[in-house]
Amino acid sequence: MPDGMAQPKAPTERRRKLNLRPWLRALHRDIGYFAVGLTIVYACSGLAVNHLKDWDPNFKQVNRTHRVAMPLPRDDDAAAKNVLRTLGVHEAPREVYRASDTQLDLVFDKRTFHVDTTSGVVHEEGQAARPLLRLANWLHLNRGKKAWTYIADFYAVFLLFLAFSGLFMIPGKKGLIGRGAVVAVLGAAVPIAYVVLSGGP
Image (cartoon, rainbow, N blue to C red):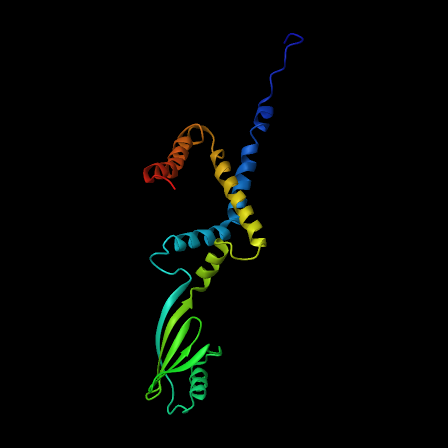
């Protein structure tokens, strides 16, 4: 080869420039694994609060019937303590009052016990928390401490990384220069089309 002419780059040197893709795939994979728990929280909560008109995602309605031993004490407060002890309720009621000659009501924040003082039948009505879903909603709606804001921000950054890194993970016609671009455009068209067709905010 004549002096002064540039030496062609060896195949190994060309391949070194393309080694970013395996690292991108590895980061995409690990961040995806790390974000699984947060994704479940936000996805389940999102589905729940999307249908607030149809149900209460934090609480469910409770209607139960209990029975306590008779006779009950004549004093209302003593009768209420007797009922609660029998039912294993340790919370103190906000109010105890006579709804009628034969009915004693024990009122709590989320439920009420209607006690038939002649038969010992107790009707419980009110709300009971949906424990896991309520926690997910509490986190999703950012009603926790300020520290959760930073966690939610990091999660949003992770999602952005997963979205953009996914565009470049696969080379060739199945990647961003071919099929991938078509699918990405179709996905982006969904919110745009909805805004246009619905008239927007």
